[in-house]
Length: 92
Image (cartoon, rainbow, N blue to C red; front, side, top):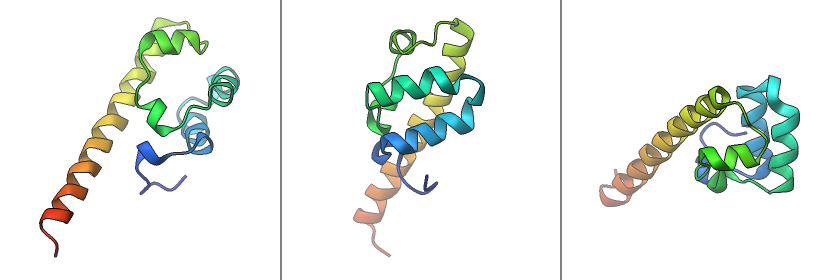
């Protein structure tokens, strides 16, 4: 996974790599769900707690941890989008 690649452009493989890095203890459950549902970066950014439950993440504490990490990804995605917009409006 290329760290400079925007999350919304992540492939299913990129999502799997991120999950492996973030949640190695829960990888087996999440791995199957990500592949089964073809969760790309764009879909990852849209996940809510009820989606996590459907994906097999039943513990509320774990859901909150994942949602917090997803929020960080969403913020980074917004920053990347703003940087792109600024670079288009104000070329160097």
